[in-house]
Length: 294
Image (cartoon, rainbow, N blue to C red; front, side):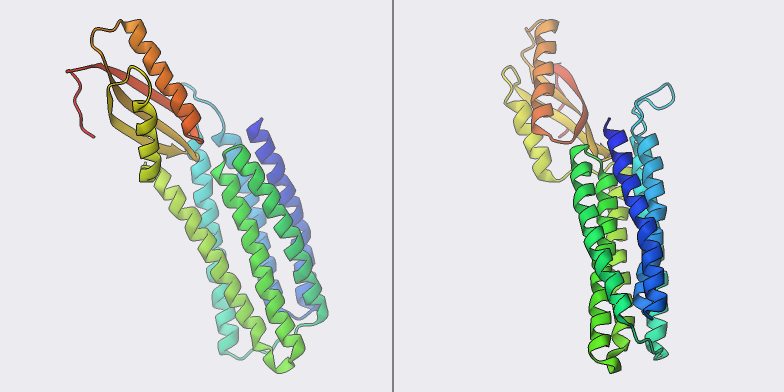
C-alpha cells in the first residue's frame, strides 16, 4: 500500500509538472524572461525525475526473493542518486547559460506575464511539496522526501524569478536582475542535488547512522530484563530504513527458549524505539563466552 501511495503522489507531481512546463515556457517566451524559461527547464528535469521515482518505488519496494535476499531497497537508493545527478546537470546548464548572458550583457525586459507565471508556479509547487513530504514521511520513503525537496527547489527558484522580474519591471535598467535570478536558480538546484547524492552515497557505502541513534539502540537493548550486556552492534541504511544486527549477553544457565524470549523482547523494544527500522537480527551469547569488539 505504501508503494502505491508513493506512486500516486508522484504521478500527481508529474501531471502538475507537465502543466507548469507549458505555462512557464509560454509565459517566459511571451513575457520575455530568460529566468522563467530557465525555470521551465528545471520543471522538465522535475518531470524526468518523477518518472525515475515511480520506477524506483515500483522496484525498490519489492520484498526479498531468491536472488535478492535483503529485498530491492537499494534500487530506491539508486533512483535517488540518479535524481541528484539529474538535478546537478540541469543546474550546471542553467548556471552557465545565465552567466554567459550576464557576461554578454544580454538585454531581456520581462513583462507582467512572466510575473504571473512565476507566481502561479510558487503557489502550486509549494502546495505539492507539503503534500509530497507528508506522504514520504508517512510511508518512510527517503526517495519521496528527496523528490518533495526537488519540487520545493522549483518553488524557490520561482521566487528568485519573481524577484528578478519584479526588479526589472520596477526599473527597466535593472534588466540584468533577470539573469542573476536565473543564476540563483541554478544554485538552489545544485544544493538539492548534492544533498540527494550525499544521502545516496551514505547508503551505498553502508555508513552507520548518527551516534545518538546508536546510543538509543544500546540503551534500549540493555534495558530489556535479562540482558546483561550487548556488543557487535552493526547498523546500515537501505532505502531510507535501518537494518541492524547485534549480540546480547544473557545468563549462560538459561534455556534456549528463555534466551530466545529475551532476544524477541529486544527486537520489540528496538521496533518501538527506532522509527525507521526495517529489520533487526539479535544473536544470543552466554555470559563469559562473548567476544566484545564494540
